[in-house]
Structure formats: C-alpha cells, structure tokens
Amino acid sequence: MIDEPAGDASVEQSGYHQELKRTLGSFQVFAVSFAFISVAVGIFGTYNDVLQNSGPVGIWLWVIVAVGQTLVALVIAQFAARIPLSGSSYQWASRLANPKIGWMFGWLTFCYLAIGVVTVGIALSKTALMPLFGMAPDETNARLLTLAVVFIQAVLAIASTKIVGWITTAAVGLELAIVVILAIALFIAVGVSGKGSVGNLTSRGITEGAPNYYAIGGGLMAAMILGLATLVGFDSAANMAEEAKNPFRTVPRAIVGSVLAAAVLGLVFLIALTIAINNMAQISASDTPVAAILRDQLGPVMERTLLVAIAFAFFGAGLVTLATCSRIVFAMSRDDRFPAHRLMRRVDPRTQTPIPATIMIVIVGIVLMAVLPGSALLELLTVGTVMASCLYGGIVILYIAVRKRLGRQEDAFDLGRFEMPIAVGALIWSAVVLFVVISPAEAFTAVLISIGILVVGAAYLTWMFFFKREVLETEPGEPLAFKH
Image (spheres, rainbow, N blue to C red):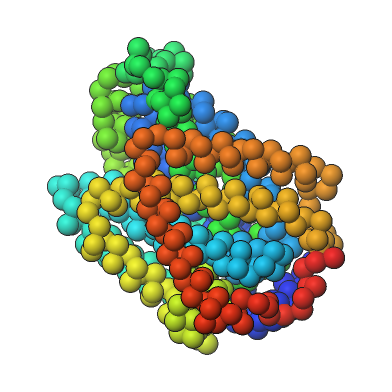
C-alpha cells in the first residue's frame, strides 16, 4: 500500500526537501487536470470553427481525438506513477535521458503554460465577462480586464495550494452539473418544441459543396481543432505531484480519468447542441453559437446562466494554468537551470507556495499583452496547440526510449503488457496531430513563433553549456532512485 510518506520519500531521494505542502486529495488532483481541460470552455470557444469549416458533422472527429489523446494520457500516467515530482516531463527527461534534453522539455512546458495563462484570460474576458457586464467589444478593455483576472488568480495561487484545490473543485463540480443539465434540457426542448433535427448530426451545413473539404488542411481536417484545443492539459496534475496526497496513485488516475470524463461528457454535450440547431445558417454565422443555441431553445435566462458558469470554468482553468506553470519554473530553478533561479526557487515558508515564480508569470503575461497586437494574441492559441503537440509527442518518444530502465513502484498505476502497444499507438497519434496542426496555411505564423521560442530556449541552453556546464552534467539525489 502506497502512502503519503512514500511520496515524501521520493522527493528526498531526488535530492530535494519537501517544501511544498501536500494538500490535494484524490478528487482535487482530478479537478486540477479536468479544470485545465474544461470541456465547456473548449466547446464554447471552438464550436464555431467546426460549424464554419466542416459543418456539424465535424463533431464526430471528437471521438477520434478522444481515443488518441487517451493513448497519450496513458503514457504520461506511466511516468507520473514513477516520478511524482514538480516539473513533470522536465524531471522525467532529465533523470532518464539527460539534463540537456530535460531542459528543453521544461522550456517547452513553461512557454506552453505561460502562453496559456494569457490566452485563457483573454478568452474569459472577451467571451464571458464582457457580455455579462454589458461591455461593448473593445481590445483595450479586454486586456485590462484580463490583467485584473490574472492578478486575482496570482493572489489566490500564492495564498495557498489548498485554495487552488477548492476553487478548481468547485469549478469542476459546477461545470459537470451545468453541462449535464444543459444537455438534458436541450434534448427535452427539441422533443417538445420540434425545433432542431437529428439530421444535423450528418449535415455539412453551410460547408455543403465547399471546395477542398477533404483536402489536407481542408475544412474537415480543420474541425479537429475542437478536440485538440480542448482535450489537452491533462498532465497538469503531474506538475503538482509534490502537493498531492498519495501521488503514485492519485496523479496517474487523475490524468487518465480526466481525459475519459471530458471525452464522454463533451461528446454528449456536442450531440445535444448539434441536434438543437434550428437555423443552420444563422447559428453557423454566430461568433458564439453555443450561447445562440441555448438562447433559441431555452431562452435568454439560460444563456446568461451559461455565461456565468463558463466564466467560472474559465477562471478555474486559468488558475490551474498559472499554478502549474509556476511549478515548472520552481522545479527548474531549484536545479539552477532557469533565469534568476536563486529568486525563482524560493518557497514562502508561511504559504508554502513559490511566490516569485508566480509573480514572474504574471509579468510575462503583462509583457505579452503590452507588445502584441490583437491578431498576434489570437495566434498564440495556435502556438499553444503546436507546442502542446510537440511536448506530448516528445514525452511518448522518451517513454519508448527509456521504459526498460524505468523503475516500478509497487501498487502504482501500470499498463503491464499493454504498455508497448499503447505507446506505439500514442506515437502514431502524436505524429498525426502535429501534421494536422501545422498543415493549414493559416498555421504558418504560429509555426514560426513556435520555432522562435525554441531558438530562444536553445540559446539559453547553449549559454549554460559554456558558462554553467556543471548544472547540466549531473542530477541531484540518488542516481538510481527511479531506475532499475
């Protein structure tokens, strides 16, 4: 039986002290991953892309994406069950491959999450808060509102990990309830009013007769963004493993369970929404088709209720993104491998949270919003998807390369004889995802930004190699702590 001291022992064997407080129970760990995924937020933000690019029939690509992402989640869970340290993939690669490879994993994760803090905040402001407050669309106001939101999230993340757990748990509970209730309400409304059609599930909608529909980078392929932009971030629980109780069991189960729950719940909600479309052209032309469908079928009160729930779900997702990003900064800094590491590694003895690392991420967000035009901020969403695809693919490759050297923890999550078939399937899927993400012509700018981010990281790694080589030569702790 694995207990909490076993998790503490793994931290000590790694050469660290248990500075972060273990306050997250099993459901709270699940909530961390599920809040990052946030089914309602993902569907609310990308359903219009499906209707405009592939028509409603494109929702069935969700099933394919869900299966593929579950394979990746199973591989990540294998790592999480054996090396439950803050920094997740950074730690896995550093200890099982070498610190240089690990550093690039860490840099990729940091950039992906730091960008996520900004994009989630902007999306919260534009799609939920501004309509709720009756504010007219305005880029400056959206950015100021985003800064206020991120500041509040930072204060909460600094105050206590327990508070983060409470908020994400509440956000997940509300999201689960609201999505289930809305799906049932939509099915009933369609049955009573007769507005809507089951035929929508196989309709191409406004894309009927569109050229290049089945082409590479065409309309049908573009609809995969619905699942790819939603079913990500499930590894966030692994980034907070040092704050989880019984991490060898709770973290891997949270990773896999959050993907499965989001996949099923999301599909039911998508089917309900699609059947409930009464005026295909009008709904497809809307920037917020989910809200439009609810207003049409259930009235303006339900639409406003949805916006409140979406705002809370967005807030929970942003809070988790900020907290997990601060943990990757903390993890790299305590190994002296992040800029200003002496400051970034500090954990406040009272709150037991990495305050400087959290503040630094807020500053990065301020800089991004100050220097990037609106269109560039929209590109950051695609950049985040590209970087997440590269990160997950890299983790799968790492697992295949080192799995035979990876130690086994008694009673921990283990795929057993299925590990290799699942890993190969995850690798194939990762290649497919990267191809889908970068193939559209519109993704060219995002790909260039992603390459630029990797170049900056490579430049800093090169500087460390020449001037601080000693920090890249060895790992702290027992050399064979996670190997056999």
